Amino acid sequence: MEFIKVTEQYQPAIALIQLNRPKELNALNKQLMEEVRDTLQLLDKNEAVRVIIITGDERAFAAGADIKQMADKSAIDMLLIDQFSTWDQIRKTKKPIIAAVSGFALGGGCEFAMTCDMIIASETAKFGQPEIKIGTIPGAGGTQRLTKAVGKAKAMELILTGRFLSAEEAHFYGLVNKVVPVEMYLHEAVELAKEIAQMSPVAVQLAKEAINRSFETQLDEGLAFERKNFYLTFASADQKEGMNAFVEKRKPSFTGR
Ligand code: CAA
Image (cartoon, rainbow, N blue to C red; front, side, top):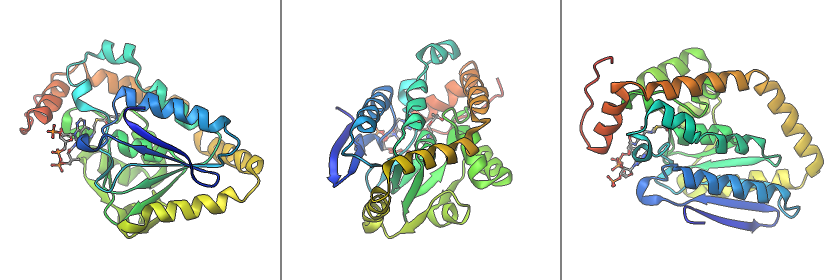
């Protein structure tokens, strides 16, 4: 594994996946997400593992999908690359997944954390969907999951302005389970995982499946709609301008084309 570190028995019955592209703030390139998908499939089959924790580092859980990998792509390139099909596997994982988040959880990073089942945040965590600032929209579930988590008005504000939510605000809006000091977030995630690991794994799996059913009944349709609109932004000059401006470290100038 090049972009993640996996510890199958981080604690008895608890596996840890650490995203490991620290210089790029754990930006989620295609290979990293494929490594996560393949690891989750293996951990799901490993009977010695009951709960999975996914984390980044103190500075960033993940600052989004890799903008440099996408910047010059066309809408059809994006459709054919189909990078989010790997993400679908994350939500098919049967065992519970806890995201332990410190620092930036932005764009795809926020979507990745929301795809997990629970989130433990450090006081330094910042959540947001800033895609609008680079001329595109969330493409890995943000318009659907953030809206379900925080409600329509707040989701509109966050997605249309790209503003960040502090850890405390994220807790207030029900996006995260608990906020703890930065030196405690992984420990707290492990404590939660330990408690769940003591339960019947069969009952845990069935309960998770049932909770997700209530949450996701119409999610497939929403995700497909969002994904097509995300790809469509790649037909715009504004997406090229927004992403290139990010790469070139300057302010974008949007023309509405
Ligand atoms: N993709 C690629 N590289 C990224 C990245 C991303 N999403 N986020 C950060 N990086 C890189 C930066 O380019 C920089 O690399 P260099 O040192 O080679 O220049 C490095 O990580 C450190 O980043 P900064 O110097 O920008 O750090 P900062 O502390 O000044 O700012 C930040 C941190 C506010 C998170 C800023 O990096 C930022 O705005 N990142 C982009 C956030 C974003 O727009 N995310 C959405 C991506 S699109 C998406 O996710 C679509 C989807 O729905 C799936």
